[in-house]
Image (cartoon, rainbow, N blue to C red; front, side, top):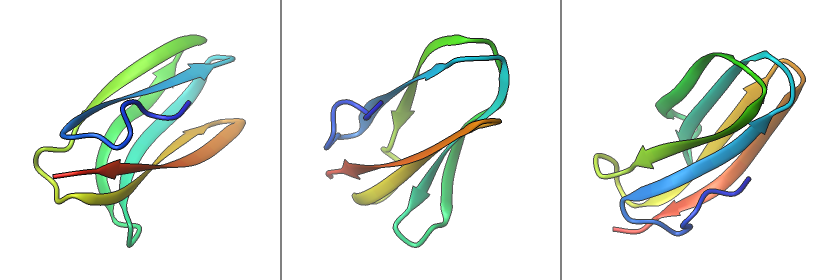
Amino acid sequence: MQNYPNPFNPNTVIGFRIRSSSFTSLKIFDITGKEVSALINENLQPGSYEVDFNGSNIAGGVYFYRLITEDFSETKKMILIK
């Protein structure tokens, strides 16, 4: 799902669903592809999840978050306004 609110300052929520038990990674990247934060890096059970992200320690701009499971991968854009 798309994060909300978007644009945000400095907090946003990233929601997602896992269909089957899987190793899950949720990471934030800057526009150059550099990893800014690793929010999740563990096995998760099926269900819906929400993760809070606080961008107060990074510069304003465009960022991407990438969710990866064993059978799914998606990248979405978010904008931090300062």
